[in-house]
Image (cartoon, rainbow, N blue to C red; front, top):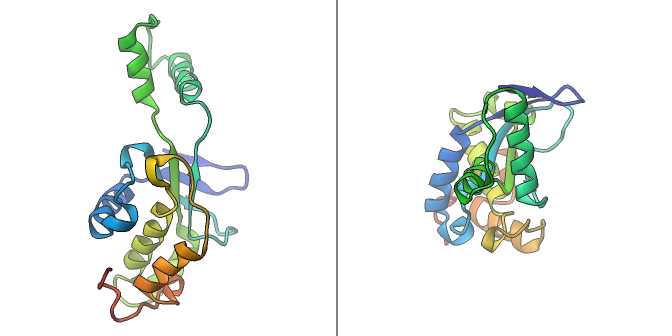
Length: 176
């Protein structure tokens, strides 16, 4: 399902990014091992006007409000046809239906410039942009870690100063 935003950009869920994120959690255990991927929705965006490669948003609205909104939408569209009693079982089902705390998006439009580079450069760039976005998730999945010196120092130490341009230090695979 593709969703078009007001500015004409297209958004689509991408579970392939979850697979890459799983590998990153194993590879960069110290940096992102705390991330609970069941709480993250992964999205691909095509927005040629946006300058960003990736974004991470924290959803801090009351979860049950979003869950009941989703339930109402499903019922309205007759995907759910029966009324639920407010039993513990049904409440848990609805909570599980939408238990997302974060949305991580990669923007295809600016990432396309890496297609012209060496073979696999775009995949490598997407991997490291995704790592950068995962690093924004705070310990305890309690919010967003802002861009700070520590954030960029970690990435520069691992990937080199030009990593956002697709140029990596030769020792990039030596993780500390």
